[in-house]
Image (cartoon, rainbow over all chains, first blue to last red; front, side, top):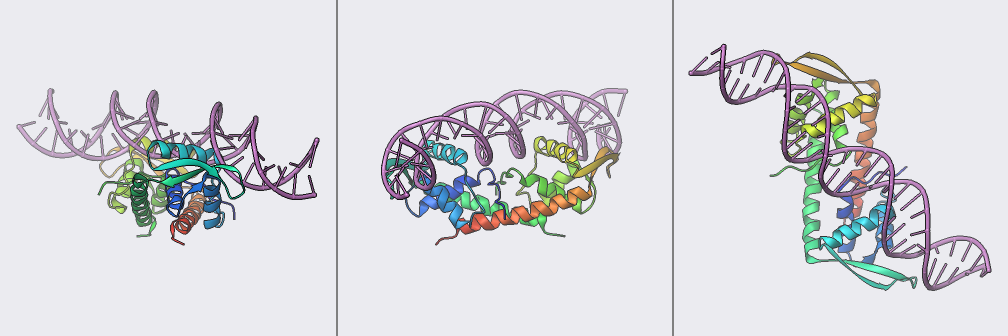
Length: 108
Length: 108
DNA sequence: AGCTCTTCCCTCGACATTCGATGGGAAGCT
DNA sequence: AGCTTCCCATCGAATGTCGAGGGAAGAGCT
């Protein structure tokens, strides 16, 4: 019932995926991931914000200050074109990895 | 066609899995993983040996010097009981992770 | 004998990333 | 006023992977 640690590199893909459905602020992204994964995946803020900065530096996402539903100051992130391409690439890599691991793990 | 990077934590599971089929030396483990994954997974020696030491420290594997098929000095590793338990646990975690990621990645 | 190739071991520094702890500020409720 | 919730952010520690190195010793060739 405990949660699984997020493997290195996976977090970016998850964030990109969430933003692919529409812009969202940091806190909301973490909530969404927790919710979608039924809390198997819990993103700490110490992982989340550095990741967002990284990704913005790389041009995958862009941000803008706005107002949250709860009337609070929030920074909204949205995918760029490069971000969408990156998402596709990461999905591709992820599935290649899962397949390759499955091959090794399968008995023979 | 290129290979995928191994995500942190995954390598241990792969090594344990290979050793679960019988003892083997380091070089052979790397070869086996490459072969089983049709070279999608390539374990560098700079990742492999530290991993083997780590795992031996934790008591998951034990080693013994021997002679390889090619008549060379080789250190053979084999799973301990704790190692087999660890393998089960890591398989369980891996599948939980894959499932959780799939949930987030699935459209909704 | 000498040379090269292959097999096998090992180590080191750079690098990237996650995590837990910590600190704030501001809105809203009691 | 005080407490809780929401939201941003940073820091140090820990971990683990990678690429580049170095070394020893058998096998095969000339």
